[in-house]
Image (cartoon, rainbow, N blue to C red; front, top):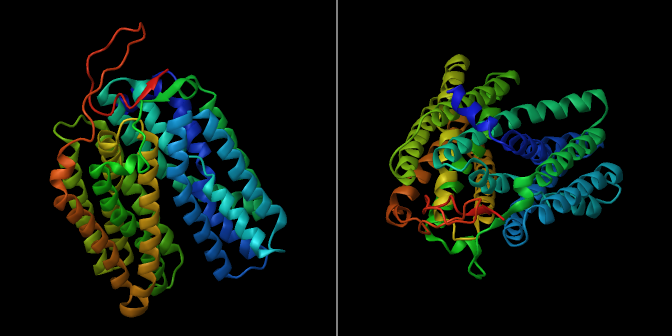
Length: 419
C-alpha cells in the first residue's frame, strides 16, 4: 500500500504540488471555525458568526466554478495567485476592521470567499501531465482525498493553537498568509506554469453542458447533504450524553474511517468502468450512514461513525475519475470546481435540514437526514445510469515530449497537457 503512494510522491513535482495545494487550501478549510472564534472574541453573537460563515460559504460556492473556468481559459498562475492574494486581503480586512461596520465585515468575507483560489480543481487537472499513466493518476486521486481528511483534521487544531498563543485576529492573518505561500509554491512550479487546458468549444454553460457531469453533481449534492447533517447530529448526540468531548470523538472516528477507506481504495488497481464502481461505493456509503439512526451508547456510536466514514474518501476519489471522463474538453478545472461547489452547497443544506430535524424528532431524526442523503445519492446514480455510461468525450491524442503524436489515451488523461 505504502509503496504505491511513495511511487506517486517520488514523481517529479508531485510532493510539491500536493503539499502546496493543501497549504494553499488551509484558509478555506479553516475559515468557518476562524470566523466564528473571531466574531465571538469581538463580542459578536453566535447568530452573527453563523451568518458570516454562511455568507463566506455561499461566496466560495459562487466563486469556485467561475475561477475554475478562468483557469481553463488563462492558465493557473494568472488566476490562482491573484485570487489567493485577494482572498487573504478580504480576511485581513475583517481581522483589522472588526465589526465597526457590519456591511464592511460582510463585504470582507464575500471577497475572501469569492476569490478562494480553485487549487483543488487545479491540482487534479495537473496530475495527468505530472504522473502520465492512468493507474498512477487514479492512485493520486485517492491520495488527494486522504490528504484532504488530514488537512480538515489538522487545520482546526492549528487555528485553535494560534488563538491560544496570540488571538483570533492573529489566527486569521497567519492562516491566510500561509495560504498565499502555498498557492505561490504551486503556481511557481513548472507543471503549473506550463499547463494549458485542451482547446474548448465556446459555450456559456461551460462544463455544465455535460449530462454525465450534471448527473454526478446531482448525486454528490446529496453526499454533501449527508455529511453536513452529521455535523449537527453529532452535536445533538453529544448534548444527549452530557459531554462535549463526545462530539470530538465522533468526528475523529468519521475522519479516521475516511482515512482508512481512502488509503485502502488507492492501494489497489481497479478494473471496469468507474461509473459502475461509484454506484457500488455510494451504496455502501448509504448503508454505513443508516445505522447511525440507532444512536447507541458512546463506544458503539463511535464505532458506527468510523464505519460510516470508510466509504467517503473512496467515493470522492472515484468521483474525480468520473468528472475527468465526463468534463467537456477544455473545462476540466471548471468541472472539478463544480464538484467542490455542489458538495459544499449540499453540506450547507444538510446542516440547515438537520437542525429542524433535531427539534422535531430528536437526535435520531437528524441522523436520518444523513441516511436519506446517502440513499438519495444512490438513487440519482441509478436513475442516470445510461447518461453516466457514456463518457463526455472520446479518447484524445496527445503529443509526446519530442513532438510526435502519442497513442490515444484514456478519456480524461488528455484534458490538461504540458504546453
